Image 1 (cartoon, one colour):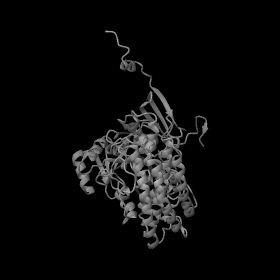
Image 2 (tube, chains in turn brown, blue):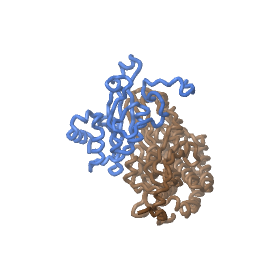
Image 3 (tube, chains in turn yellow, blue):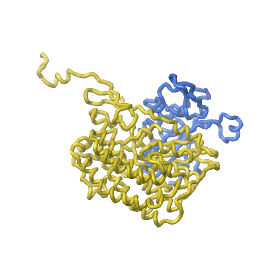
Image 4 (cartoon, helix red, strand yellow):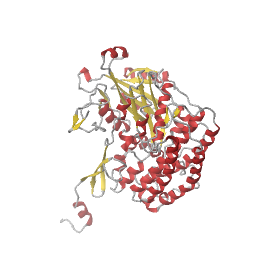
Length: 401
Length: 176
């Protein structure tokens, strides 16, 4: 029987396009820094994604073998440069674990204020940049309007706007200046109602929901298997946050604070009563949920900073005088992870009893979060690749170190 | 479960594949032989009591002192360690495993030491093992795609080894 050429299915089967390799990056505007993705595409469909890293590799671990722990703090700033404060905190806690130094109450509350403000600033960039990935420019400007004010506060506290080196082993380099707490409270009062604007711009925006809901769905098991942490893990419904489940040295900072882990339980997020409802298209573990977890964490961080300000102003002790660390370090090895805005940031320090460590290792959260890309992007459209990579909210400085 | 109990339980099950432990350290660790790491990890992941389902980090640590005077005082023979940090998102505890390797396979300089890959147990290990291979020079047997990840593919040497020397030039770029 002759082939029925007017049968549309046969023609579609016959006219196949060749697979094509497409380079996205390393200088593509929506790849969050110098990330190169090699896509194998069949028309609009992506069949394989291969991330290539290392364009921002600055040998931080090798440098760490030649510096004292205090001298290495500026290098931790430059890992996740959008959340320098949280990187400082992770390394400081790791060093304190090795030398078994305990902080005063006041120093702990100071660190909570600073770390949670850093989380707000970082998630604001994450939100704004995600808007850029999806082709809308205004949320970015709105996000930076608020972020500038946080940076002003940080500048007043430590003199720097991006690479702070503020939290050090022992506490912080200086106490908060006079009047800082009032300014911080004023900022929070002004900031809280503004969050509604972000929800109007993105979270509930019909186009945004169409671009993100049910795209890049990742199950909880898959997230754990790939080592994804932070909002990426919680966006898949896994109830795990180091601020509650981490090591005691870290969780004692948050002792007595009222906070709930932001994760969906029985179809609801904690505190979601006065925030937009979950759209019915969204599936747990998709891009929209990862974004929403970040937005709710911002709300939670505001609440945590308020609690910390109250405690800090009444707490006893000093703000944590930095330890000079000019003497030799004790022998031993320690590993400590903290909950940075983008996931669990771990530091591993091996000391052989000298003033400089034998080996330092930074376990990067984005490194693991990015490794899931090739699995998530298999079979999606080219236009969805930026949406998926953007929802992982990676910072290349932290991946390449 | 106490550390001593866990070590005994693992020794009973895996015999001489558990080569030692240090329970006095700040983060206590268990030493595993290079050919046993994959099955031990699989057991730790699937055991109902432990459920160590999250591999946090794999690190390569090189122990080598070029200065013979210092090496005599160091208190260890030159070797390479691969350190695995595991934790559980369900039971909220963590564990450290170590694999002790010679610096070079069979003592032949340039031949990388070998350890079984755990990328079949934890997908996280895929990139982490590539990084350890890239920077510390450890070959992971059974890894699906073992190539450099942070350094360029034509890079020579393993930068986090203690006897590494910076190349004088790379594609016409002066090194030092």
